[in-house]
Structures are given as structure tokens and as C-alpha cells.
Length: 283
Image 1 (cartoon, rainbow, N blue to C red):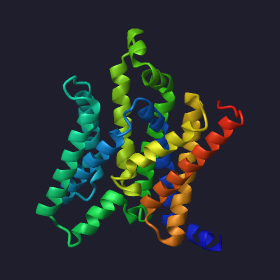
Image 2 (image 1 turned 45 degrees about the vertical axis):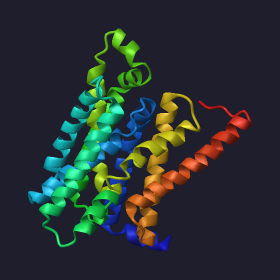
Image 3 (image 1 turned 60 degrees about the vertical axis):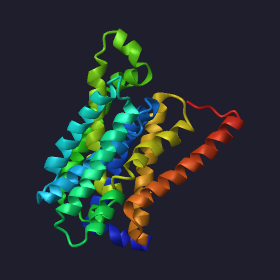
Image 4 (image 1 turned 45 degrees about the horizontal axis):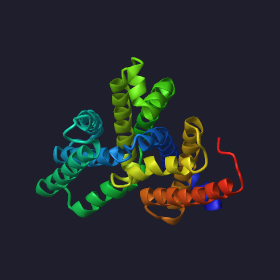
């Protein structure tokens, strides 16, 4: 505890905790929707796309790669959604096609036009999370806060619309709702979350940050609202514990957070079985 208090006196640790909590919160909000719509791997696909765009930004020597990565990932999210609606290319095939292609081209660019003396280290940190979460500037923290606030406001404001397209998109469309717009909104918000989470857990682990809290909450509750709230709480707690453990013991930030999420999922599975066995209520 004394060591932790000592670390908390440093601004970079406080910045890392703030950003980690915000990213975990945003990731969990739409995680439930993606799981229920059986579109869980859109996060994985977009994270690979973001990796490819980050590689392009590195080749172009862009000091602020966010200017390229964020709009590029959003554009690919829209493209992925449109391609997935094509009857000839199903959603899962579209994700695999775009994600694998972007990952391959990104790694190819980093090899052919490498400007770094430690290519393996750069690739590994991008795929599994970098220590840059502990070197955040005040400007980057403010940008993360603004984008996270935008994500939360979008979710709260369009909560009922998101609920409708999640559970019965066909009925919602029959009632006159523009379901395409809200599916597009979901894709864009997920793209923003992916870009925010790249430095925290890396492109290969982002799906865990989106899916694990939702699956854990589903083992304890039955209603959409209860699952969403529980998912957000679990995600924030796991992110905090993961970052603190990483700082205290020097473990990789992203892998530690995902490990805590996985352990929490196992605990929720056991708790859910115990509650069902003893007639516990699932609200």
C-alpha cells in the first residue's frame, strides 16, 4: 500500500489510471450489444485495421498518428458494415477479410519501409500493448476524456434505439426505425473505442476488453440494462486492478488487464451457477 501511495504521487500514474478507467468504461458499454448481435469480432477486425493504419503513419513519419488512425478506422468500420450487409459476403467473412488484409499490409509496410532500429519491439508493443500508457501527456489525456465523454453521451442518448436494433432489428425496421443509421453509429463508436484502447491493451487483446465484461455480466443478470451496468462496473474494476498490478510488479499492462478480466469471468461463471442452484434472482 505504501508503494502504491508513492506511485500515485506521480502524474503519469494518475493519467494512466484515468485513461484506463475511461477506456474500460467505453469498451464495456457496447460490448453487450456486440455479443448479442453475434458481431463480437468486429473489435478484433477494427483493431487489425488500426494496426495497419498505424504502420502507414509510422512510414509517413507522422508525429500525431491519431489524425490518420481515427478517421481511417472509422472509414473501415463503415466499409465493414456495408460489406457485411452484402448477401455474397457475410459479416464474419467480411471481418476476416479486412482484418487479416490490414494486419498483413501493416506488417509488410513496417518491414519494407522500416524507420526504427527495433522493429520487433515496435510490432510487439503495438500488438500486445505499449508502455506509452505510462508516458501520456496532459493533451492526450484531455483528448481521451473528450472522446470517452462523446462515446458515453452517444450511448445514453441513443440507448433505446441501440436496445431495439440489438434484440429485434427486423421489428424495429418494420416500425419505421432507420436501423441502418444506428448500426452505423454503433460501428463508428466501436472504431473510436478501438483507437483509444490501442495503447492500453494492444490490437490483439482489444476484443477481450470488449467481450469479457459483457460475458461476465450475462452470467449474473438477465436484463439488458442490468447486464450493461454490471459490465461497466466489472470492466472499470478489472482495468484498475490490472493497471495497479502492472505498475507494482512490472508486468505488461494490456496482458495484465485481460488476465484480470479472464479471472473475473471465471468467478462470475461460478457465482452464476451457485445463484441458479440456490434459486437466486437474476434481475
